[in-house]
Image: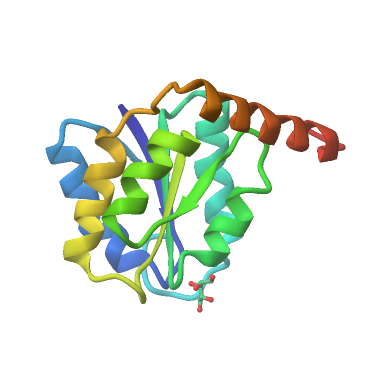
Length: 152
Ligand code: RB5
């Protein structure tokens, strides 16, 4: 898969730590910054990652900030994005199976690099269940998005 990744200053070091692991799993990584620990604004990094995913240029996206919360809120403003904030392995698996999440968010100040790498691996390697009840719920979320998106 092609995986787009972005972080703010609060997630920069974890981004640098997970990139080689994603590549070692056989995926292509598109690193959209940031490039150092200087203070930046997380929406500026959520947007390019989510645009790549929403347009189909990337298969999945990964966003990292201090808590993962700002990135999650920003990402879920973008039509077509289902961003899951994940800090445990159960959620990493189930958000793929149930929500078909296409962007993963994590907080560098919440999880250590060991569990973060396992979360990324699990999330990348788990398929959507394709279950009818889950497809129906995703369809309903798309309807909400369509209803409230004034300027796509
Ligand atoms: C930056 O200080 C911090 O607010 C940001 O990384 C993130 O945690 C926001 O949700």
